[in-house]
Figure 1 (cartoon, rainbow, N blue to C red):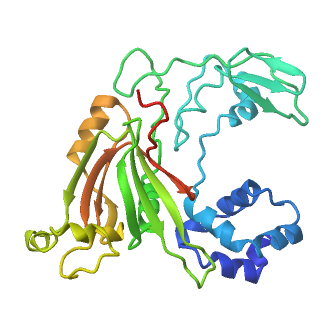
Figure 2: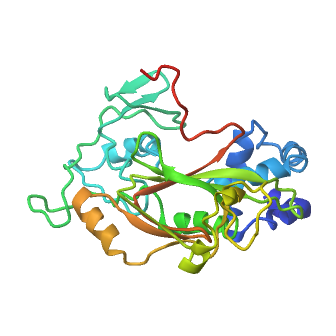
Figure 3: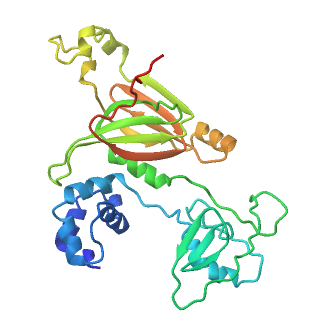
Length: 317
């Protein structure tokens, strides 16, 4: 409530894109930076002077609800229902809340279950449960053998979150792209220019397209530009050379028209059916390369000075 009534904090939040103004993201970033979130005055004194850093984090972070800890809270109620029970999850918690019988729960000094994952919960006004619920085994929607379906739609990332992340770097610059050194994921390193009006500093972001099963790269330059761009001196932007060709040596390319998901991608659908997890296709169009990737997840992280996608090891024998 204090934030919603603070004109200066609201003005700062308005400098962010609308989809990046979520209250839970703001509080999570402040906690990430070891700031106070309980006292409104202390919260404000922390956020305002550090807004540039806070805003930069909010632009690269997203919250999620894959929180199995809530099972410890629900377990006392579920255990009192007629058994066995079947759970249906509606939402995007990746199925982690469908197995309260698989976790070990600790209520103060009271332990229940012996699962490898231990959930901690403090009960107020309730007695700890003495048993765990008996869950019906999961079944597919099209399968047989169970009257009730217990399942989840497993989506590593939400489509809206992917679209928002892609929109965030519209018309910035790609400085590097390629498969990771372990060859499973595909990285696109983007230089995001500073926004002086908001105090947000320039930074580099790594867009990691996880489980990349297809990567197609082609030159975006037409043949007539290529004919003028064959001079090796164009790979060095310090060389004095006729600028009529494409200067490869600038070592960046304008991310325009930008990155966008391909709707109803046949390749993504085929891989989803074969592997059993959602896949997506992204079209990345810049002024030097066009890139098409089929992937299953997207992770965006800032990268700092000295970041190198590959380093030659000391022992090369």
